[in-house]
Length: 227
Image (cartoon, rainbow, N blue to C red; front, side, top):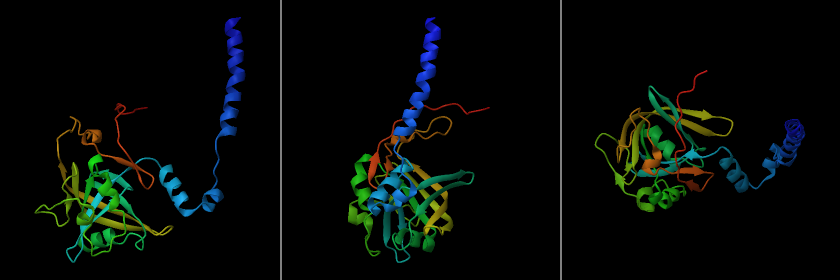
């Protein structure tokens, strides 16, 4: 009798719980989003897509001026060949990095750790093209003989890329910039036997929204999923 009563109670409660979830979730539709203040909308939508990889991209102009800018829309494109992509905003809003890459085809990506967040974030300011952002924000450049673009000396993970493609996205004026990984530099060798790179060991931060920065902690690694 107890088990039958318990079953009946659960049968009645579960649909009610479902209805509560459905009716009490906050719904935000497209027209509401469009009506928001542009900065509120930008913060919300940038947060909605989740935590993002964030790095400093180092370039050098054809006139020899170093440039450094923070980017968070960075994505792995493939391992063979090894390729990384990132989204560049419309050229009117963020012209220097993409122009330098177009002109020289070489650039670097540099992970950010907690000790350099303030300086890294400051590179998002709209400096004139004649300004060396490394000097402006107080980060040291590192030059390597085989790379025409500067690295961030204090970064624990650095890698050099060569341009593959710059793909326009007509719907909003942004660009997908894709590149081949030419070389990688690690401050310490924390690689696991299968090649996995535990970024938490390097203190690499992640970003959320336009101006939020977070540290990471591995929960678990799971085996390859099969049917």
